[in-house]
Length: 562
Image (tube, rainbow, N blue to C red; front, side, top):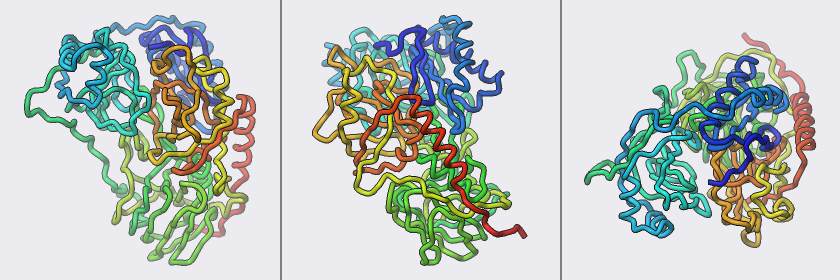
């Protein structure tokens, strides 16, 4: 593992977060507790996430109407008074035995790197317990220290897999882990374990905690080969909800999204929430909802819904073909829908996602106080299916009428321009990396999703990483939506809201918050171009955007409640 942020140094991570360098994982845990306590006593805890890594602590502002400077003085005060040393001793927790079947697709490569045979890799991996030092990345993902010395040189893959099966036993950069859920991942897979390491229903939710010890053993013949799947909440509206729609056809990928989950990153639970926060917010404002009320997030082609109770709706983002009983209606305005009518959200004409908001807000099964559907961990009810009934909460006037101007789309045929600020790992990259990034164009690959955009540079891989040594061994640390990670193969990955809470590839740039809406509208096949901004420009543009959104909803819909 190579340290990414010097001890005591603070580095910006985009325009809404920063990283603090600490000595080790124990010091990280201590500082996380101190910062969290200070933010809580100041009444600011609900707007921030504090995430510990191996040698960093990340502080990120979650609320869209806040800036990071609001909490920076509080954190600086903590740094001036907090010891750098942690207080959790390695090996102080429970001992957990994990039977494994060692048949992973990378076992032979790991053996070659270590200079051992596959049998020797297995023998040394099962020789002694490993210690949990950090929990993060995905729900319940525990980083295990104490890997035998030759295996400490096994690097991450040059290109992360888009999906790693749950229960996979993996190695990278001196640590071992078991993937609790299916997720993207760049570690080397050496086996499988049929253990359940995370449950959203039973505290403490993550089975492993820092200080616990894990002993891998060879599973007996006939042992289970897959971990039990987590129970998914049913699509069932509360008894108090109004049933407003029945799903006739679900669309390509239609899910409930609210403002997302907060405060759960410490156990690896992503925030989730809308991929395009601008369209989401404007849709809710049009129908008079709270800004983080649940909507339907529609991808590419939306659902057909049969109305069960009179409602008012608004559809915003992506220029969809919206029809009511077969007649076209405009997006970006409040529309009354009466019992028996059929609302059809057709293909999107510009962009990749649109948001259907219902007055009163949609309701559904909550996990960690949110109905958001998270593609990384599988939390939430997931995609709609035919026959489901959607419920909504109570509502009252006034409603808006229409948008004065539609949210800017990514354009048709032209590259999607994403403005970026420099990332925190400048010394890991070639001196001209940001210029090379800005001069290139990238194609969004088909494997992209709400976890991240996988980009393919035109003309082949770019020379972004420094040629001075191995740059694949970044200490795992907190990451944010918009982070442009660069694996060793030079094909960037831009993180979206369902991204892992920790990341291990260096970040060359971060998409500015002002362009997160555009980022969420990028579709497979689109072309992306990055344009650098400095931090002050990014924050100024975000403030201008927020002011414009305050006046975006025009008029009041003329109605009264019976």
